[in-house]
Amino acid sequence: MILCKRKVFFLFSFLLLTTSNSFGQDAHFSQFYANPLYMNPAFTGTINCPRISFNFRDQWPSIPKNFITFSGSYDQHINALHGGIGVLLSADIEGSGGILQNYTAGVIYNFRVQVTRQFNLQFALQGSYLFSSLNWDKLQFASDWVNPLAPPEQLSNLNDKLSQFDVSVGVVGYTPYLYFGLAVHHLLPIKMNSLRHPTEKWGLKWTAHVGGKITINQKRKDELRFGDIFLYPNVIFISQGKFHYLHEGFYFSFYPFTIGAWLRHNFSNLDAFIMTCGIEYKIFRIGYSYDFNLTKLERSGGAHEISLQFTIPCHNDKVHEAPKGRNNRLSPIPCPRF
Image (cartoon, rainbow, N blue to C red; front, side, top):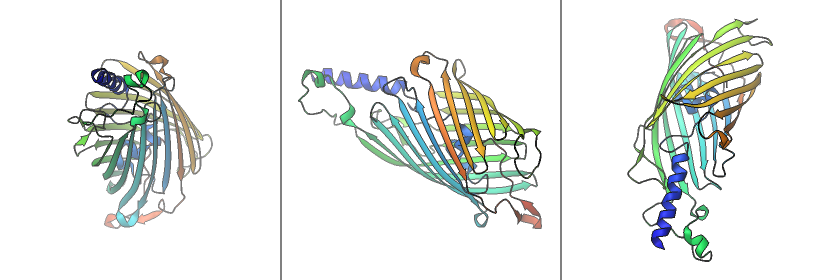
C-alpha cells in the first residue's frame, strides 16, 4: 500500500509539473509592457511620475488544475536619487485550490545616465524574497479512496514550505524612437519549490527586448490628443533553463485605443497567438489579452489576462538641471503601455 501511495503521489507530481508553465521557469505574462517591472527591473521610474500597476492572468481555465497569477507594482523617478525606486509583488497559484503557491516581494533601485541629449541608459538592481508552500490537504493519494477516514499522508523527505532571497539586474537604453534592454533574474541559486527534487535549481532567466515607436500622426508633441496614431513593433526573447521563447508583435495605438498582435514560439514550434486590446485616458489604462494556444493544448481555454495602470500626476516631466549645466527634460521611455 505504501508503494502504491508513493507511485500515485509522484505520478501526480509529474503530471502537474510537466504541464505547469512554471516548471523550471517563472510565471509568464503576455502584456509585457503593462507589467514592466516584472519583465525588466530597469523599467523602474521610466515614466518619471509615480505609477501603480495591477495584473491578473488565468492560464488554461478549461483545465481544473489551472494556473492563476497576480502581480502588483509601484515605481517612480526621484531626482535626488538620480533614478527610480520600485516595489514588485507577485503570487503564482498552481493546481486546483492552490496546491502550490509561490509568492515574491521585491524592491528595486534604478540609476539613470543621460548619455546624450536624446539617449538615456538605466541600470537596475533588484532584491527579492521568495516564499513557496505546498498545501498537503489538497493532495489526494490512493488511500483516500481505499480508506477515506485514514489520516492524510506526508512524505518526510519533502518540505511543505521554502523561503529564500534572490537578486536580479537589468539595463534599458532608449531614445525618443527606439528602446532596448536586457534583464537577468535569479543570480543567486534558487531551489525549486517543495514538490520538486531538492537538488534542482531555478535556472537564470534572461530577457532581451527591443522595440520602436513610429509616429503616424500626432497633433502636439507635449501631450496626447484624440486621434493621435502610433505603431510599436517589438521583439522579446525569454530564456530560462530548457525553455526558450521568442515573441514578435506590434501595438497599434489610435489614442485612446490600442490593439496588439503577438506570436510566441520556440525554435521549432509555434506556441500561441496573442491578441491585446486596451484603452487609456490621461492617468488610467486598462488592457485585456487572450492567448490562443497553437499546440495540443488548444482545448485548455488559452489564457486570459487583465491589466490596470494608474499614473499619479507630478512635476518630474518639467525642465530640470542636467549634468554639464544643460537644461533638459526628463524623457519618459517611449514604449507601449500594454
